[in-house]
Length: 211
Image (cartoon, rainbow, N blue to C red; front, side):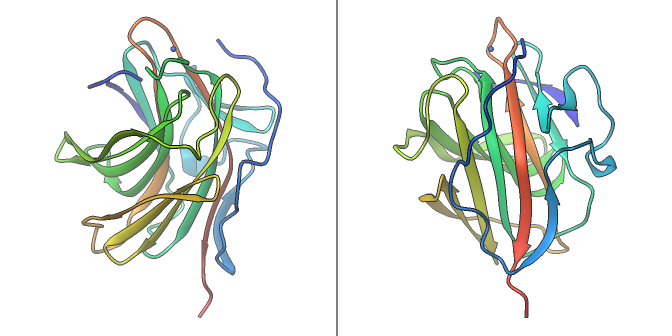
């Protein structure tokens, strides 16, 4: 996990109520799951911007910064990856965001599926340290908006395709270039220019259909 400068916007910590965000992962075999009763070592070391409390993983990026965390539990290929994203203290005008990392190799090479507190979603590719938009920011009715909103993000990968869902509603299907030898997953969040955002993550699950 590292902090990195924001290319485009993405705003204190308090508890929020737990809620079921949407349809869970559907694979019959669980490869990884985390309810954050503690910080699993596969996420790395805790710091002031990244820690577990009250059954959630919290990320608090510095102003005008993004913060990402890769999970080192393994390399994956075809998976159904779900996570609840909680806008604990997000910028309600959309200048902060959070979401999933998939098809990841390292900090300079990964895809991310992101949502904002005002109801927008996007997909980006980070390649050789440069950011490429795969799906530009677009308003999506399946996103729950406002303070404390809980949204379940889901990525279902198969070959070069990834189907992306929010709260059980399909957002988009993209065709990309996943790593040939497997990939890592993770989470990501970003703060607006002049304040710190706080995002929570819960109910991480990776599943696959058993042969």
